[in-house]
Image 1: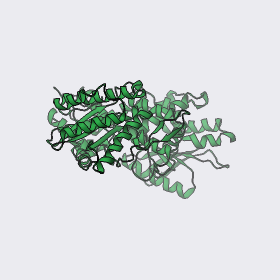
Image 2 (image 1 turned 135 degrees about the horizontal axis):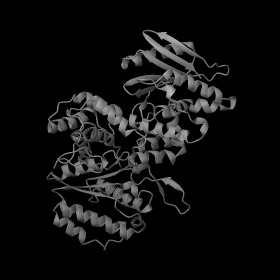
Image 3 (image 1 turned 30 degrees about the vertical axis):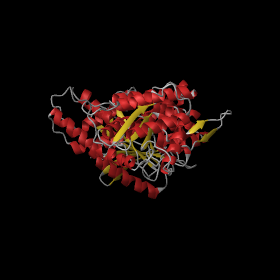
Image 4 (image 1 turned 90 degrees about the vertical axis):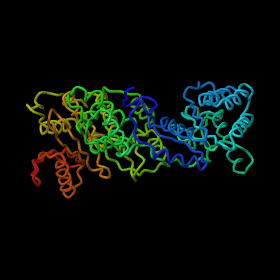
Amino acid sequence: MRKKFNDTGLCVPGRHYMADTSRKIAQIMQLVEEGEYFTINRPRQFGKTTILSLLAGRLNRRDDYVAANISFEAIDAGIFGNQERFITVFLDMLMTEFEFLEMPRLSELIGQHIGQTADMHALSGVLTKLVRAVLPEKSLVLLIDEVDKSSDNQLFLNFIGMLRQKYLRRSEGKDHTFQSVILAGVHDVKTLKAKIRPDDERKYNSPWNIAVDFTVDLSFSPDEIGGMLHEYSRDKGIHPDIPAIAERLHYYTSGYPYLVSKLCKFTDEQIVPPREDRNWSVADVDEAFAMIVRESYSTTLFDSLTKNLENNRELYENVFGILINGRRIPLNTSVPVIHQGCLYGILGNSGEECVIHNRIYEQRIYSYMMTKRLTSGPELSAAPGPEYHTEDGLDVALILRRFQAFLKEHASDRDEKFLEREGRLLFLSFLRPIINGRGFEFKEPNVGDERRMDLVITYKSRRYVVELKRWYGPKAHQEGLGQLSDYLDTYTLRDGYLLIYDFRKKKEYRQEEILFRDKRIFAVWV
């Protein structure tokens, strides 16, 4: 079977090109060997199911372990409303797993108790018999995927509470239970809220407070991405610059497993095939990035991203402030809205300040926010015209002058707070219909510098850099010119553009052509 890059469900060695996760599996194995119970909570499509499968496979290839890997994904929600039905289904899943592992003694033992086990106390006794059946030769490990499907249910809390009690009694030498229990889902089971009272009041549950923190980084490093590309290159007989391509893939995705695979899949199946030369280049990854952030392209992951923002106004406002206005917020995950942003994979969980997790999400989110603005009223619309276009590109200076006139005409004293909050988004919305379909714009974040945002516009074969910043005085202005000049150097450009938002009461709308170092910079104040 020909290997391919996989972007749906479980990744399988031998069928899919996969990053080398052996170091991650080794770290998790150490937790298992130490007898730890823990939760792998990561965002959607972050490789949790694949990691569980690889871990279970490694354990079952050893002589001293038996790993039962099951999932709650297919369980009907109604089953969690009836204790006997839940226990029956749970035991049936275990029996099926042991049958697949060709362990008839264990599957028969479980089969004897299906339909005969009425409560959690009885289930505890069945699990004790199961573990004793493999001791002392083997240790039993339980892996459950998609646990948070049922985690707002009291029955689930009773279930993990039973596992917790057995863990504690094992420590006292009074019970036999699983060597390790691993629960996987988006949410951290230790901090899930559950509906457990008749008045619908919510509280934090605690039956899983025996679990250790899971700190293994499941994102892909450039080296791990490179290993996947080496395997692909050997199969295809090509010789790309793998380190450079791996770095660019990581640059766009921050190692988000699904996004890495998706960019590779675009490159392999859509970008490279029309060419005679099948070698990959960094430019191919750039093109794949442009494809995945296109508004018309949709996946369940991006649908979930939008849904999570739409359903939580506070999260939306925080992301808006970080992404659009450069707001600096400490990364304190004890704050519920920040913790939620990290759980959903919207916010990155490294560093000291909140940032959007990856550049693909940045583009998808700010495009979504722009679309909302464009549909919120005619006053936010720009009328594209041929005067903005030249033979080989765009007249960016004219675009900035027209945007200045647009704001001057529509701004008033009562609009100042609105403009201060959404002025940058207004420009992005103004620009979008001008380049729509024939160009592409992407935002380069400047982490730790809330004064500026760099916008790179690609149109035909040309690139333009526009820096958006607030006015903080002449000294900061000179510093900003230096930053823009340095950034232009990265693209080997001599012409740049500066859009300055001035929120002083006595501001003036003006334009200036600035010679700075060896650069020509056209600036407008709004």
